[in-house]
Image 1 (cartoon, rainbow, N blue to C red):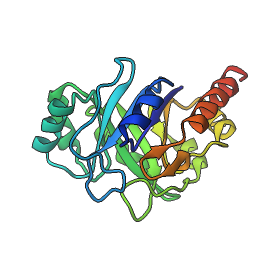
Image 2: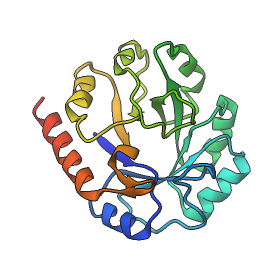
Image 3: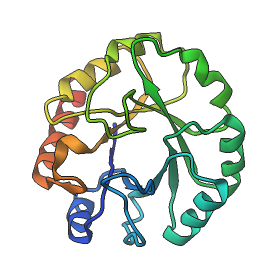
Length: 209
């Protein structure tokens, strides 16, 4: 199980988190966000994939940020089309396409993206493109029709390790969990000790299956 920690900003906080070796670290390039990264991102250990999160940005803007910040993955959190994703494939980075999920989500919408992204990400549908801080009903994932691995996002908290493990027991290709606001002391500042405990608990839950 991979872990992505998103919405990082503070250099000291980033350095401390890096010592925990999350698999992905996310930096938000959507200016209205309270966690907007700004002009600079740090160098990370090679084991951590530096991920840029974008919302309906242009291909040109994203590719420039990929080069400037040496991003290894991009997360597209807006209404980007399959054709848009296909153009970004030329940049050589991992592409994570996010979808806003509620009880009426139609998984058939994923079909057009199957060949143009590496992973799907399922987040809670809400007033913001992401970071709404609430969980959608994970039972809808029972209808997931694809073999493509996905990230689970949306209001995941420190006490959710057992519930996450239950999704794995459904033989779904859950690849990673994406954590953010429930592990913060303020927007963009993560509580490292809580993340450390969550990672250990999740590892224990999975190994005990």
